[in-house]
Image (cartoon, rainbow, N blue to C red; front, side):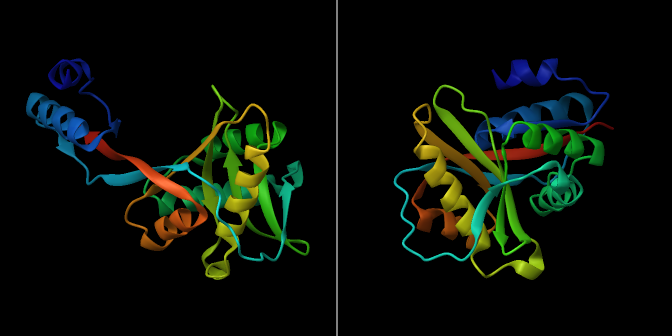
Length: 201
């Protein structure tokens, strides 16, 4: 299957591969042999599923649904998040994603008073599963538990919904502190995915 896929992939443009590490490595190697292309250094992502929310900490702040007033800041934060995880995106794409999330009530904010200190997005429910992604707190506001607070609050909110059975999220395996945070909240690691860029010559 890896050989068949690699032989069908185009060789005239960059391609992002995502999947189980061994499979991605096989496809990337075959594709590189085929066109003499390069494989950019990849990023390993760890996928988590909520086992049982375990959040006994008292958290300062409150959870809000973002409004259109937040769009510019939210786009900036999405771009910063994408750079942090090594998967940069164009501003126009980020603006579309943020706009859709705001219009659908899926962009969540954690506020201290009137100040937004963290944000994340929730996917639409599909077959009883929702995904939390884009959890971002600016560097100057980190180490105060804001990312954990918003993740726990959203998870609690979502598991109370009748049509949500599972909550999943993913995180670069290289971020030890963030991975510890998710495990502490009750998420368990269920799979790894490798992301690489194929660069034609």
